[in-house]
Length: 190
Image 1 (cartoon, rainbow, N blue to C red):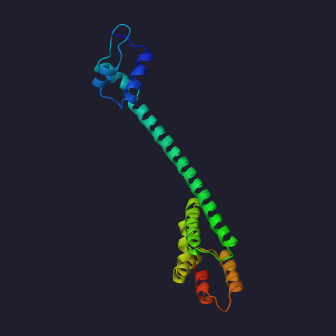
Image 2 (cartoon, rainbow, N blue to C red; image 1 turned 180 degrees about the horizontal axis):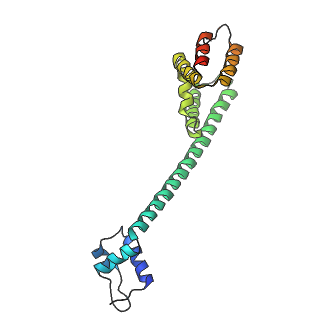
């Protein structure tokens, strides 16, 4: 019977793992023999694999490696967005300065306008302005009214009192007012 040290068994694991979870035959061929000139057989490798939970250990390390890669990728992307935002801000500042310095009397206004447009888009994207805000700003009145009605239908009576006061205080000649009857119906439902 051959005796293999714990260090030898641990080294066998690392050779197996770093080799991409080698087959038993490839692992045996890759391992160096012990000082006595012995190498483990397939049965011995299989026993170590089971006893020392090589597969579970490898899976755990693979998960750790994936998490480290994800964290590094997120960090790298965040740094990239920061650089983009900083550069876009500089570009935007330069374009605005050009506008100021030229008192709107300039030879190439198109270039300045284009720079502001590009810089603003890059800065907005890099700073993470949510698309939801942009979508809401572009929404039709009907769409916004539907969202408000959904929120109103979920509001409790205390919220409804506050909402009714706000609506009453915010109405002007030009604004579209939510029909008081609709508000009363929503209050009755809650």
